Image (cartoon, rainbow over all chains, first blue to last red; front, side):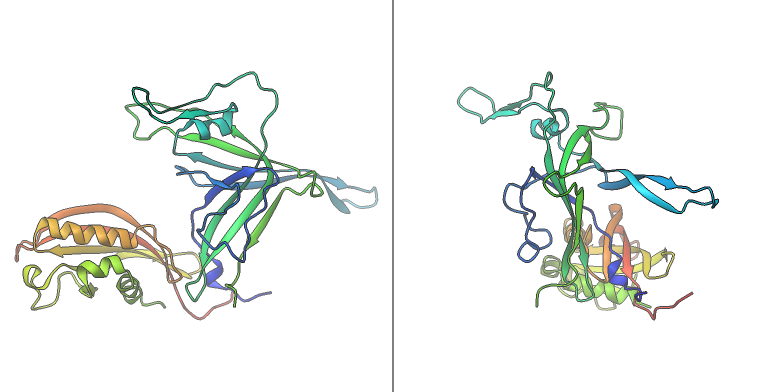
Length: 200
Length: 136
C-alpha cells in the first residue's frame, strides 16, 4: 500500500486531439503539458460539456457443480467510449460525426468564404486515432500531462443539434467516440499515460 | 492546514499581468485597504477575504468561497483591476491553488463612506490542504 499523495488528486479539464489511424502518439519526453501534439494530430476546439471516458466488459462465470459461487470469471467482450459536446459548429467537426468530406474556400473578390458538407450514402465509417490530455501539478508546481490514447475509433453524432432563441444554451455537437480493437496491436483499445515527474 | 489567504496572495503576487496593474497592493483578509490608502493617490488595489466554503471528503482540499474587492480611482480603473484579477485567477491551476473559477461576475459599486469605486467579485477555489496524513 502506498501512502496517500495529495498531488495525485488533480482537477483538470481535458483537451481532445484526433489524427488518422496509425499516427504516432506524442513523445512524452519532448511534448509537454498543453503543447501541440505535432504530426497529424489536430485539436478538437472548444467543448461545452466535460470529456467523459468509460470502459465496460462482459464477463462469463465459470461454475462447477461442487461450489455455489463461480470458481473463475472470464472476460468475453469489452468496449470503451468517450463522449463530449463540441462547442464549435463547423463543417470539419460535423463531418467527424456524420461523415462526408468538407470543402472550404477563402473569400475572394465578389465571392464569400464558405465551407460545405454533403452527407449520406456512405457505407464505410472513417476511423480515427483520438486522444485527450489533462494537466496535473506536482508538489513543485511542475505541470505534467495525463494522456489517454485511443488507437482506433469511430466518431458519431450523439444527439440533436438544437437551435433555439428561447433556450439559455447554445447549439453544440454532441459526439461519442467508440473505440475499436487495434488489429495491428493485439486488439489493444487504449493507452493511459501519466507523466509522474519532469526529466532530470 | 494550508494558510488559504496566504496561498491566494502568494499565487496572485506571482502573476505578472496583475502585478503590472496593482503592484503588491493585494490585501488578504481585509474588507478595505489599510489606513493611508487612497485609490487616486496610491493606485488600484485588491482586498479579499474568505467568506465561507467547506472542504472535500478527505479534508485534503479546502473549498473556500472568496470575496474580492478591486479598487480604482474611477469605475474604469476599478474594472481594469477586476479584469486583470479575472485573467490571473479564473480557470487557473497550480499545486496549492488547484483550481479557481469565478462564482459571480463583477459588480461595480462605491464604498458608502469613502466614495471609492470598486468591483465586487466572488471566486470559488480548490486549494490543496497540506496536513499530516491520517489513516482510518
